[in-house]
Length: 146
Image 1: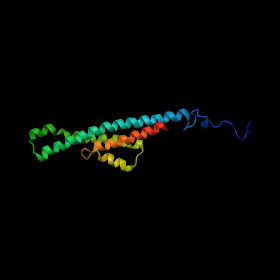
Image 2 (image 1 turned 30 degrees about the vertical axis):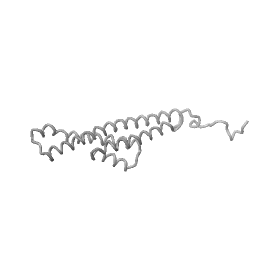
Image 3 (image 1 turned 90 degrees about the vertical axis):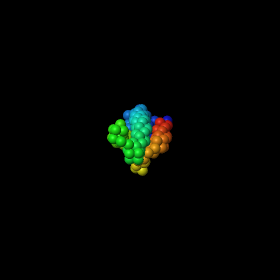
Image 4 (image 1 turned 180 degrees about the horizontal axis):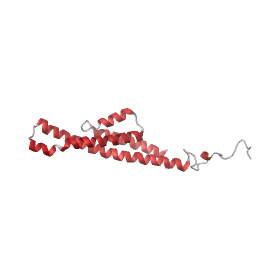
């Protein structure tokens, strides 16, 4: 038998693992899972927008070569005039997904800058997306294991 000053079992609600205190038990697992699912959703949205933005940026480069390099006529210009506008609005949506993922993953400010520039430099969005996806997957896997 132990003395009253040294109990055999924990006496505080947070110590027994019943989920009644923050950071313990079922409530903590549910909160962690909610955060992980939010991170996975942000990663999927970012990945989709990175590919769309990259494709639109390549189309924009082709459009610029046609308009300024080859000096195509006004009849042909009207068929590709939508590309700069579409890329601009798609880039805005891309920026929203970048900030969403960056804030959920709690990365450094430098990562945000690189991700933002990924939608401006041709082909860079594909390269950055691959690295970001690998890092985010690793962070999500580590969070699941914890």
